[in-house]
Amino acid sequence: MSELPHPIVAKAAESFGGEVETDSSQGLIKASDKVPLFEIKIQQWRGAVWVDPSSDVHWLIKAGLAKGDHKDSDDFYQQIERAAAADGISNWFPTDVDFRLLRQETAARILTDWELGIQRDIQVGFESVERGGSTAIQVGHPVKHAVQLTRLTIEMTEVREDGYEADEILVEFTTDSRYKSSDLEWQAIIRALISLHPPSQTWDRYRDQFSTIALPEAWGERVAILAALNERGELAESEPGMHRHYSHRNHLAGSTVNGTGVRALCGVFLVSYQDHVPLPLCPECERRWSQLPTSH
Image (cartoon, rainbow, N blue to C red):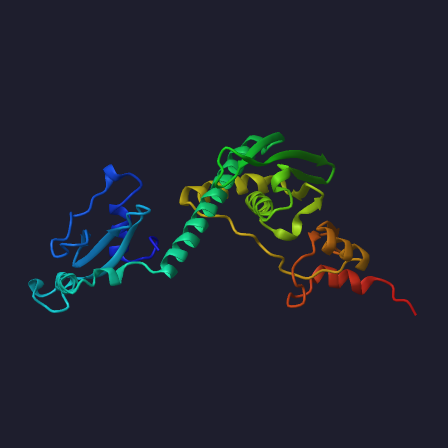
């Protein structure tokens, strides 16, 4: 909620940070003599912040405009005064639904910050192996910070042959047995792979190893993109497949069940996991299919 684009919400988030010493409200609202409410203001907007004594969480429970030199019936302070006189301030307190939403928002923020940390570590590690080599990154638990969730190793191999230049990247995950096959492990894996190379159809999987191939210049471009995303505090997004492809039916069955990659007729290496029906047919697959001999 603190990220909503409203001036009084932004001011409330700015006024009450993580440390009490840095709080910068306007002081207590005098009209609320029984329930302590902190006043915040920006332009004509006014807000009342209540501090939950059981959790020390700050809630913006009332907002409004300063009107008519505080004599208008809709004036923020007039509303506070009327509510205080009727012992109605508590009617603005958060409900069970609000507390549940707070827990959900807090969990989402913790996970987002955790994934951003993985993405930043990936950028630093990626820079060190951009032209070959290997590096290891420790991924901690998003809540139990002293616990290591998994360790990922990134290995970059340059392939330089006549008429062919590419870089192969291999990522291996060594996960604590307590979190093996958990949703949290998979979330860490997905975040790492998206950070490194977002096209989802290009990763091949064998057990705890994932590999893909790209042109040499692609990795430098990816490092620059990651740096920009991390600077803005944004998570990279996956790039789903844009086409459906032809491949051997036996290979597709194994790919769907085991998460392994298959080679399409056009040469693309992909992992089959998304619904292919609404996607357009790959033009190169269609061209090569038309050239195959038909059986009679």
